[in-house]
Image: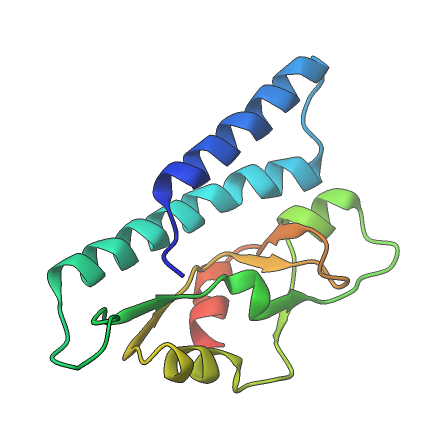
Length: 144
């Protein structure tokens, strides 16, 4: 499904308002979540532009070229028991998803030639939260 940039901005605004209401510094977990919006927004905007500008010559309702995939579905942080919260959420190490056919199946199912995703972000080991990759994280996520 097409990712709406407006929905991402609305979600970010609510998150920032919630942080502001606490009157306290944001935790590492919340900071990683806020940081992820830059990647989510830029990849959504890029996917939307490509889909608007490049129409595929095919039959059917979906003539778009790109499929947007959340990197947190592809990359999972390595569990590091005893690590500081800041390292777990803002300096994470990652492994690729064990099911290596996920992105390909998404592309094929939606009949898209290109999969657009993010760099620099992943999900935590249990998949409940967002974490940011450490130094070189975009290179790591791009290679995986």
